[in-house]
Length: 82
Image (cartoon, rainbow, N blue to C red; front, side, top):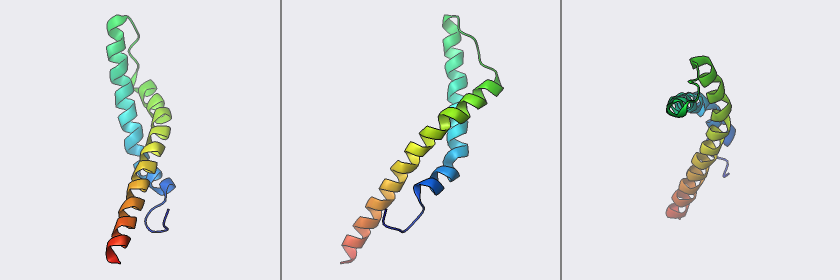
């Protein structure tokens, strides 16, 4: 990291509510699809709980990707100034 901009941790904390929410929706829809073959449909509470668990590593990976893109953009901007 070049020191400018947000850290990966700060990006992940800002994006976590969105990542957990998206994961919860996906878990619920996956349980609906799984019900076609006889599986149970998860309640909203279980979907949210699993979404919070799955959302943490997914959000961390996405935050690392965003931080890398920010570093590449900063490097290119610095190179163009010279």
